[in-house]
Image (tube, rainbow, N blue to C red; front, side, top):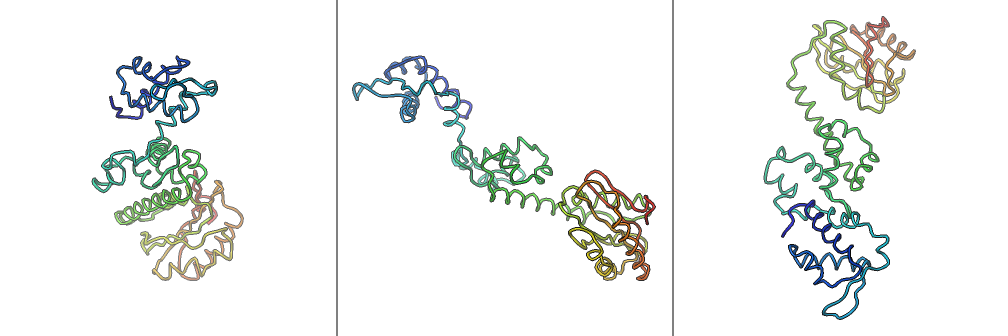
Length: 321
């Protein structure tokens, strides 16, 4: 009889331990007789493991020792003891063709489960928890919500799996970020030219284009969307990162990309990580000064959009521009 899964191995261990617990002392032959369908080698291994852990003492003849439960029996937890022997499977225990890295090389990455891809990124586990087990925990916890996974702090993932140390965390986050950048690149390359006809268009474009900024950014960022004379979007550029103030949002920095790209109009965009995108007094003052500078340069500011995770505010709609 050979187990083909951890569940079967657990069941085999449990059957043997239950018989042993019913006996205060015994010879191996007694156990062989009680469990005739089980392999003698496996029965001997279970007994030897209990001896090594101090639960059994051996007395009598060397050729036919008698096994007796020690005083440690009172503190013996069968389920936990079996867990420690069964559910410590490492990736190396699997046949080489079934290991995640070998499967990736043999198949396409798309053929691998999320848990296997995670195991490859985690690389190595700890005693009692393999990389594969850690990958399975992440896949079970987050499912297909990789966006949510990408927003977790190192300590949060460590609570899910002890095997996710600093290196594993960095590798997971780097892989997810590359995936996002590739998705953004594809979306940008395939997206048709976007025309801003009104405030609703401006809000719609900024909500979609700056989705990651609204959801993930930990600091304030100031961006400018450049438009041609027909108000088609040319591109967007990041101007500053950090608290938005007069020194950072200087007209020279804000409008330099517009001059370089021969833009005719711009949309100002920034985020509020705090969650409330209501325009502050500084926002109103800076916008007013930038509007005055834009008119001098022959540029038009179509709107100033402020984003948070759950809300978007247009300063045109608020009649502040």
